[in-house]
Length: 114
Image (cartoon, rainbow, N blue to C red):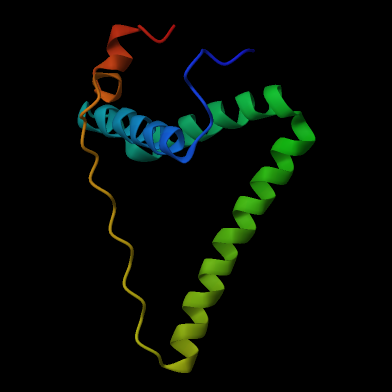
């Protein structure tokens, strides 16, 4: 699959995509869909697509790396508690500001992405 012109894989693009995913998640939850069901479904669909693009082995390795990162966070939090340090402040969730019409949560209903 070839990238459309003007969509270089940049940090800015990744940030826009993350905002779009969050907007879809928030819109589904606002409509009454349980957040857990939305996240699990999004993860499953993303994983299936990842496997289709890069192969099942790469998809499994990627999930393993993500799991290891989460374990590292848990270990660090436990180490902070053991040392008696102050708990690090939890990172604040970024507010999703919809400036670009392509990031409007309603885009999922318009089906313009098909």
